[in-house]
Image (cartoon, rainbow, N blue to C red; front, side, top):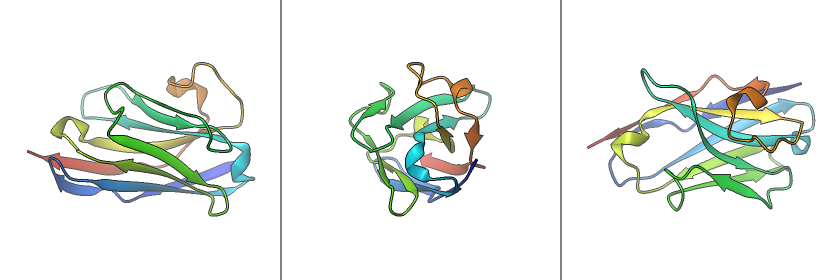
Length: 125
C-alpha cells in the first residue's frame, strides 16, 4: 500500500505557473503508475496526466497538453505536475493517484485505488 501527500497548490494569476508535488510513502514507489486528477466545484473529477513507472511514458488531457508537464523522481518517491500558462478554468482541487496495475483506461479515476488528500489551485483572472 502507498500513502500520498500533495503540496504546492496556491493562488496564482492567469498566465502564471505552479509546481505541484506528491510525496509517496509505503511500498516501493517505482512499482506504481502515477496520475494527476482535478475536481472543480460542482464538477466531476477529471483526468489531467499520467506517467509510467519509469517515467518514460506520459499522457495528458487535451485541455492541459502543451501547458502541463508530469514527471517523477523515483529516488525521491515524488511525482510532480508543472503547470504553466495557467487559466482560470484550471482552478480546482488537484489530486495525485496511484495504481500498481497497468490499465489502458488510465484516464478513469476508478482505476486508481490510492489517492492523496488534494491541494487547492486557484487561478485568478
